[in-house]
Image 1: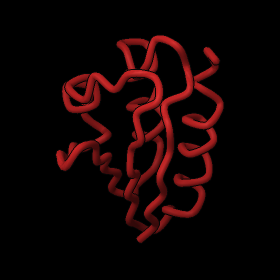
Image 2: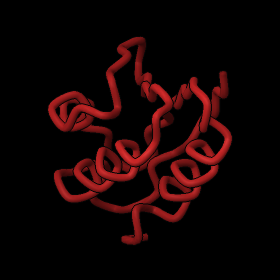
Image 3: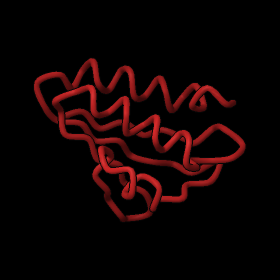
Length: 88
């Protein structure tokens, strides 16, 4: 299992477009992927779950990945968050 903390960097936060992109990227991997924010944990392969976070800029999220391809999944997903979803 890989657990990594990330910060939302883009100005608009985790809105519809980046939420969809996170789900699309996560779905490429077999590993389970969960995001925790303020004590709530969601399945990050669910668009409804990711959008329900409504994480604004500056939010700190904990990403948890577990599975056969967790290392590569974590690398790509953490990079995507750290790059501000291509919007920062």
